[in-house]
Image (cartoon, rainbow, N blue to C red):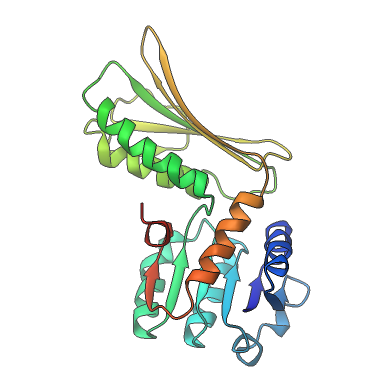
Length: 238
């Protein structure tokens, strides 16, 4: 499989390492130094594109892939205000687009457990949830895309909560998300359910980028030949 890597940073290099071990070829590697080589002609040589850049360039990168018939897997967060437009473009172009805020299979197991626990806790008003996310200092957006996904799942299950904020709040209708940036932390997400007498904690700790890279490469292998907008639930079945 020929892969175009849009965003050749630490994640791109880890994906390349895994892809080469599986016999795939990186025929295009784009970063801010060689952006001018991201042309329709070069892009169309790829079987699939993997996009891990930054919010300011993600939407245009995804559009370029879709309008040139190249299936695209994106893991960039912070641009989801444009998600509905990208979904419509994908349908218009009869293309293939795969998006996840987090490609770790462990995180998606964690998300499933979070939803189940929230369903149980909805009938326990003495317990109040708080979400914490911790990432490396190079991460530009806060809260993380995964934290937002987890928060939206909580809001869907907890009748008392109707919004989230990226700060501490004493409003009972508001879910607080706390963001921390610490050097060399790949990613930690924690939900604390606290009452006056105890705390129930659910936590996922990534030990390296490899789990994210494996998931993104799995999505890139799975997507070609399909049409539509997909996510981890479609690939994993949960």
